[in-house]
Length: 343
Ligand code: SF4
Image (tube, rainbow, N blue to C red; front, top):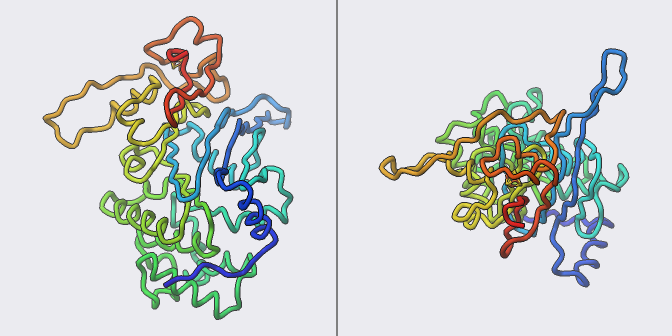
């Protein structure tokens, strides 16, 4: 049985003390997150911004899976990368156990990365092709100074077994594995430092459908065994429905609706969510459901519409939608929506 890493750090000690007094705090609370990428002309002068993430807020609790869904380009992957500070935020805060991770210095952030890990969409490009997979799994432990050489090897071998690979595959190279196996290696690598939260960025979208369910089942299994929280980013609503406790729907860099999974699927409130759900094929072709077709293209993130960003495509648009930005407000237990229809 794989044991959690025993090594202690000042961060862990501090957090345990804090948990004694504030047990109800979410693991992660994100408020008003923005990420705007500056654009420049050939002379290097600023010409505008690509507004990838404009207003993201959510809470993630221990052992919870929060799905983040939306069309390609809606800002969900940028949100995940910004939380790990693989790209720096333009504004907002992300409180993890009482500390704003956007305000940590490099040394503090290195310690924090031990608690936050990421599983990437493309398992091939996230592994060094020149390294044996055992070394790749051990690398995060090396970076964080966990254990000695033998401890690290023993843990890597344990992790490989835990994700469904064999110990003798420790010495093989990434090209010797299938896509599904490489994603298992990516998951083992993320687990190496015993994190509390993993950002899963489209972890199954590059895999064959037959392999997707195996990897999803593995993620669920290790979530139970390692007490993990997931921020699960995907465009496939069927996959997210299977794994997520709560779902946030994103459109043009905004979370427009967030609700417990069953409630979101049975009672979607935002017109965009309603259209997304209506496009999911029914398993039984005899059951007909009306598809809501959203007209027009997604506006450019360089030139966002005024008011509600969905107003250029919304079938229920009202005059005030073009002026006022709707706030994400609670409408039922755990159900938040940003739409003037519910004011
Ligand atoms: Fe549609 Fe207005 Fe609601 Fe936006 S605020 S989703 S435009 S009804």
